[in-house]
Amino acid sequence: MEEDVYRLAAQRAIEYLSALPSRRAVPRSGDVEALVQFDSPLGEEPEPAERIVESLASIGSPATVASSGGRYFGFVIGGTLPAALAADWMVTAWDQSASSDAASPVAAALEAVSLHWLLDIFELPQATAGAFVTGATMANFTALAAARHWALARQGWNVDADGLAGAPPLTAMVSAEAHPSISKSLGLLGLGRGRTVVIQTDEQGRMRPDAIPDVDGAVIICAQVGNVNTGSFDPIEAICSRAAELDAWVHVDGAFGLWAAASPSHRHLLRGIGGAQSWSTDAHKWLNVPYDSGMAFVSDVDALTEAMAMHADYLAVGEGRQPKHYIPELSRRARGVDIWAALRSLGRSGLAALVDTCCRHATRFADGLRDAGYEVLNDVVLNQVLVSFGDADATRRVIAGIQEDGTCWCGGTVWHGRTAMRISVTSWRTSDEDVERSLEAMLRIARHVSTGPVPG
Ligand SMILES: Cc1ncc(COP(=O)(O)O)c(C=O)c1O
Image (cartoon, rainbow, N blue to C red; front, side, top):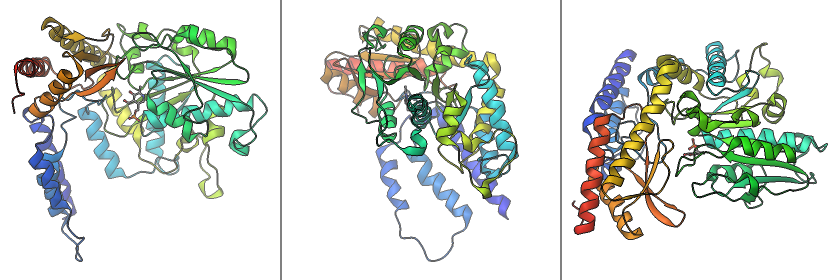
């Protein structure tokens, strides 16, 4: 029976989720090596779906990174809220193309509702256009495509119709601490990864508005809220004031930092945010929905739709908001459904608590490490902690030891010339107990590294 395989998959998925609290943050090397079992020649004959699910569960699950568990602090990776995961299962069962209301009334409707809720949470005007894309990289690309359209249209040039050859000058200004997805997006948009004017930052990685130079022609300024290393926020209000003098478009990359708006105790970090022209964020980070889910918001609806709209007789659709006119893709997953489910399950207070709790955990990590004599390199204003365990070699050895130990997982970085370990707390699942267990492991390994070989 067809239903049997769905029940089996649900059962194996539930078993996987139930085991998360007791399993290692990363797979053992033997489990990764066992993935070779997947590498068989494609058989001639069909296989039963149940057998396929069983091999995913028995070979695949052990080789996953437990990034949806409570002790994973690498990169900026959110967990998955139960309502969002369950909604995602519904989305998969529905198998909707979320391109238009004709292709999926429910996808279009829930995306529109999510957009209204998000604009409200981020305190952006309700007329702002929204694009539901794969992640913040694509959100940056989408918003900057609108910015490019606007900047050149003001000089009498329609870049989306006529391309860039022969176009008037356009300067993209990018913080020295911008996430690399900004320069990648500018490259994809033909503006050149290497042609940007780089704006200097302060010791926390915040853009210095006084360093924004005067230039001729159209300008796009790329700011950020939530530096991937320090969690710091560019001073958006001052940047927007300076941008007004240049008549520039301000884009704000808020992949995780924009979610500070949901918390009354962190919202002040975003002062002036409504003065920008576009914003990007990720739902798969701090909203804790499954991958892949990011959003771009653009105040100039026409600039976005001029860049993104797709028309054809066969695609003629209804009167309402048509998702395909705001995004690079046509057919795609009904991402708005997971977002709607996550927001509804949290409510405003739950979302604020999610942000505040992660920040509280980050502060506890910083305090615990500092109290033990290690140097915290950043002002912990949000959910990111940078810690040094001595010189570069010692810090690298501690990171390697922590990754090998498997109690928790943290990655490394180099911050202003100092090798550091990054701790990013972004999951609803992380409990006080997870933090204490992880801190104990970090300190145990750091002590061993300073006194001898790292325990295996
Ligand atoms: C500030 C910032 N911008 C953009 C991105 C890219 O996001 P994504 O991986 O969703 O494309 C990240 C990822 O961590 C980020 O921290």
